[in-house]
View (cartoon, rainbow, N blue to C red):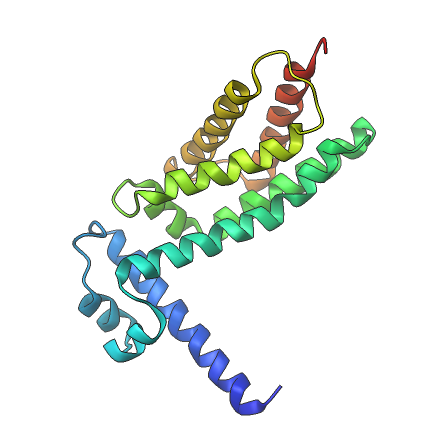
Length: 201
C-alpha cells in the first residue's frame, strides 16, 4: 500500500473514532436532538469541514456507527447459526455456541459506553428496530430448515424480543455478569428455545 494513502487512512480512522467518542460523551449528557455539530467537532478537536467530509449530519454519524456495530455482531453470530443448523453432537454444540455467545457479549462489553447510550432511549429511535431486525435474521436462519409446533412468526417475534431484553437488562444493570457467564446463558436460552419449538414435529 502507498505510504501516503496508508497514513491518510489512519488519519481518517482516527478522526472518525474521535467523533464517535465525542458523540458518546455528549449522549451521556443529553439527547441526540440537543447535540450540535459545533459541540461534536469541539469535543473531537476536528474542524466542521472535516466533519462534513465524512457525515451529512449528527444523525448520519450515529446511524453509520450503529450499522457498523450491528455488522460486527452479525459476523460474530455466524458460528451460532452454523452450529444450530448442523448435526453437531451436544458437547460440540455447547462448546461452539458458548464461545460464540461469549465473543458477542465480550464485544458488547468492549463497547459498553456506546451500547449504554443506545439503550438509554435518548440517542436513536432506529437502534431498537435495527437491533431487533438483526436478531430476527439470526433466528430465521437457525429455524429455516426446522418444522415448528407454533406459528413461525410468533416464535421469531417472541424470542427476538427476549434476546434483546436479556442484552438490554445486562447492559443497563451494569454488566455485572461476565461475558463468559452471559455466553452460558445464551447457550441455555437457544438450546431450550429451539428444542421446545421443534419438539413433537
